[in-house]
Length: 500
Image 1 (cartoon, rainbow, N blue to C red):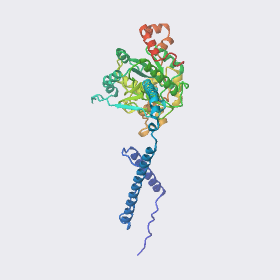
Image 2: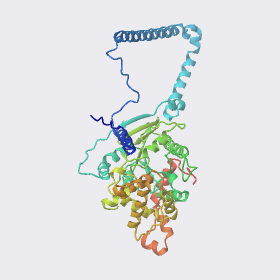
Image 3: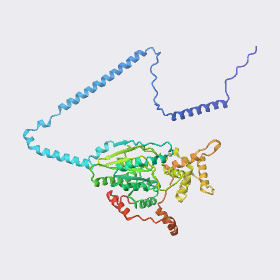
Image 4: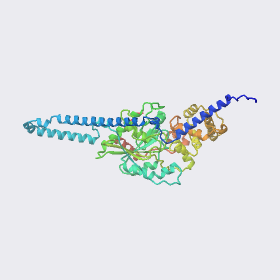
């Protein structure tokens, strides 16, 4: 009988490397699934305990239990000892009242009573003015009260801004009725896009309310553009520039830091609270579009000595604030945060154009944008109006010269270039244009792309006289509006607040 040679178990290099790749791919897949798993898992490995087959298991468990009881008894004994020492210390303190003679008590009774009365009156006055012991207020946490707002949602309203408009009446009216001062937050890159004339009219119809425009994100627009917008908005209502983001790296207006602008706005609010002579704390309501920085402004106003504590949750996505939140700054000032609202517009537009505008305002989460390419087309149309903005966009994404006949084909070429550069490719290397559009929208939201708009008055100045007469009507603020701005500016001490 012939004995055959035993076959070798060695495998080819191709098969070994293939197995390694499969194992690595399986590991990557498992790690991805673990990241998506919402259940919490501790990083500390759980103690497996003593095996049941261990012969001395019962003795070890008894020893552990005995050690636990001894530790508890030792803690109780130490606690009783501390209590006894504290009681002995209290009993050892001499009673000053018993050591004083009766004659000295009779002589100084009137003087001590008058001094105590004067001291209590001074403390009450300080508490009323809101200036009592600033150090103690800084050590204590902010008093924050959260109020849930319940409103019925119609399932047929699939769009986020339609749901927001349905909640507009309840949320906005609640904030206006509860507030003495309304801070209307506007995005410095597009103040007119985040502004609603109906909101201003509704606030003016409420008696005794004060409205202030807060121009946020001033570090994303040049100095001259900020000056134009301040001059334009101050013809309607008092306007205050503010940088709510505490990031150190800024592109423009580097001198106007978060600490400087927020302190001056807070001083203005406290000045109005002092001049109002109310027997209670004034309430400042903060309203505006989603993701314009309302909660960040409140955190900037309530920050103390560079602390990291945040009174309101913030995020770069729209819809982080879902409830009304009242933050007590001191005994004379309270700030009311509210969810972002897409205010009704006087101009009628289609759903597609409305979605594109809101996407540029970052008022809708990225996942809810149905057609991001339309928003990119609107953004490119805006950037093309200024060579500085257009060159900055091309430099950031390293866009080569593109041959295109219209805006739509140019937008498609830009998206294809960014999709290939960012690796947003499908099967067969087909560029995913929607994913590339979302990348641009996220960069625009985070301020990585430089862009802004100009007020209508400055646009009219750049046109010829014939174009002005045919396209842009002259903008002249009424005398009544000018009087309102001057009176309210005096109440808040806004005259010469920031010399820009």
